[in-house]
Length: 408
Image (cartoon, rainbow, N blue to C red; front, side, top):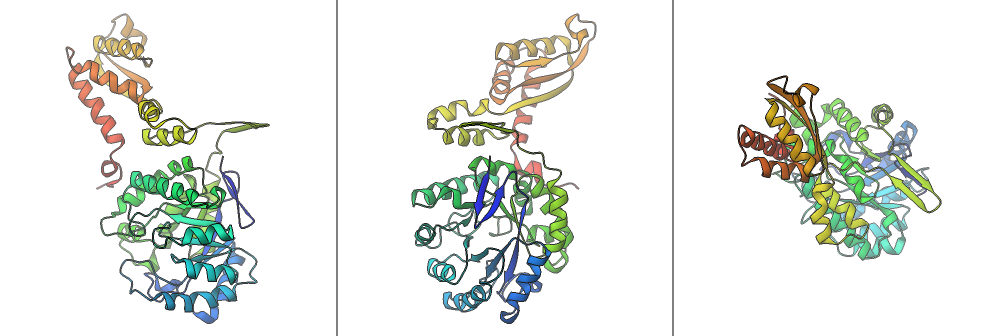
C-alpha cells in the first residue's frame, strides 16, 4: 500500500489525487501561454492554490528538446527570486531543476521539494543535497538525458535503476516520488509510447512510490489532435483522467481548475487496492500483468535473481477464448492444461461428443500456456495451427506497437 507524507501532504492510494500547479518562468517553453512574468509569480501561484492546487512547481529552464539553451546563471537569476516570493504561500513549493547548487539555494530560499527531470543523471551532487535536507524528490525516468527511455519496459528499467542508486546514496525511500517521463523527450518517442505509459501506469505501483504524471498539453496530445499547445486542454484532460484511473497520485498541470474537475471524477472510477492489515501483518492483492513486474515484486521480498526468473512466467494468469475447434482437439487441450496445473472450460456436449465443433476457455499461467503451445505444436489434426495462434496471441499481448498504433 502506497501511503507517504510529502512535505506535510498525505499522498497515496487512500488519499485524494493531489494537483501540482506549474509556475513556468522559461520564455523558451513550448507552451507560451504558460509563461509567468517575474512580477506576477505570487499572484499566479495564489490563483492556482485558490483553484485547488496543493503543490506548486517552479521551473525556469525549458526542457523542451527544441528550446534555446540557457546558462545555469540565467536559470538561477530567474528561479531564486521566484522561490523567495513564494515563501509565504500556504502549500509546499517544488523547485524544478537538475542542478544541485541551484536546488540547494532554492531549498534555503523556501522550497520544500525538488523536481529533477534527469532522475539524478545530470548532476552527481543532487543526491547529496536531497539526503542532507531530507526533502522529498521527484525523479523522472532517464538514462543519459532526461526522458530518453522509450516504451514502458524501458521506463520501468530506468526507474528501477534510479530508485536503487538513490537509496544507495542515502536518499530516504519514503521521500521518493517517481515520474514516468510522459512526453516527446527524444525524437524517437512516438505518441504510442505515451499512450502505453498512461494505459499501463499501474505497473509503477510495484516500486511502492507515489506516481506523478505530467501530461498537461504535451506533444502526444498535439500529434493526435493536430493542435498547438494552446488548444490541447480538452485532450490533456482526457489523458489525465485515464492516468488517474490507472493510479497516478499527483497530477502536474498548467490548468488547475478544469484539471481538478477531471481528476475528482476520474478518481471515483478507480477501485481501491484490496489491502488488509492487522498488527504487523499485511496482505495486499497484486495485479501483475507483465512477467517482468513479477520479477520486481519477488526481488522486493528478497527472492534471488535466478529464482525470480524461473518463476516469473507463473505470475501472470491468462484466460483465452478459443472458438470453433473440433471436440477432439478441445478435449486434448483440456487434458494437456490439466496435466500442467491449468484448466479449460468446455460445453457439456463436448464430453459426450454430441457436437462436431466447440469453443473453450483456456485458463492458466503464462508458463502453463507456453508449455501447452510447445506440446501441441507437434501433434495431429489442427493442433499445430492452434499452437501458432496461441503463440501469436502471447506475442501480441506484449507488443507495444500492435497495442497502441491506433485505429484507422
